[in-house]
Image (cartoon, rainbow, N blue to C red; front, side, top):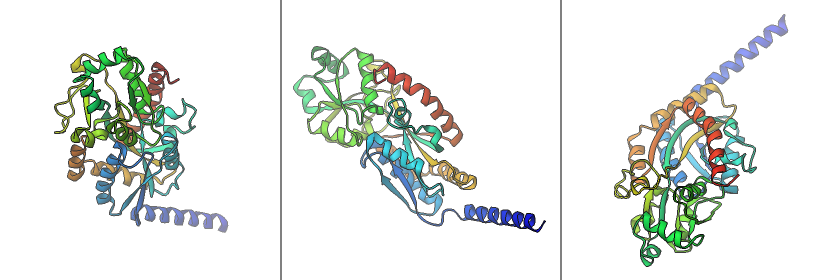
Length: 323
């Protein structure tokens, strides 16, 4: 009887300590893992959101760019982190591609989603000088040039099997053209720089990731793969592909997730902080300045979205010949 009583007391004490720990959380700085390189769209979104999240949690959040293996390194680092709530990360579209491509066994089931933050449409963006030299002023001109020069035009699309690589496949399917996709393992930032410098003819990445070079005039976006124009001042005059007779609609997604096993109370506190941070005026302004859409989903909504993506994305990959 004494042993049973002692066990009960021990359990009550542990539960009390856990509850107190959760109530005080966080008591130190947190780490947000980014599977992609600094300067890309994911990095910009994550830094903007963690700045808002810091206000809710009362602690600093350090962004840790864990690049490599087409995002696998960082995604696995999020799932493998100590489940104490102090390490989380931004998971992206590519997570749904890793298992079909035999790149990793990790899927959405290895994470506890916190929220979806952003969706971002691909754009057909080319080197401005190359376009001018070849008389290309719009998407129709680009399609005509590619039709006359099959397989010659090189378009950057971040890593192999990534969202922007698949975007190139969608563009080819929608237009019937043949382009050569050039991949960049560490993300879109390297592809955009290569296009701006004329090493390749263009990119099929998001407008936000190409923004600085579009604004400088080094790159020219011919069309955005969305149902509506991007409302950002820098992009509002860029027509959608649909407006130009090309039925190409394609977006990526970005959201936050914890490793499995984080205490329920801590997870709830993080979810509540995310819900408040998404409405932070500074975050809203930052995303508008970046030309990024805020597409919030709760943890439950995001979990269902990821489960469906695990079905839909491989199907899309098969269509464009990646599987």
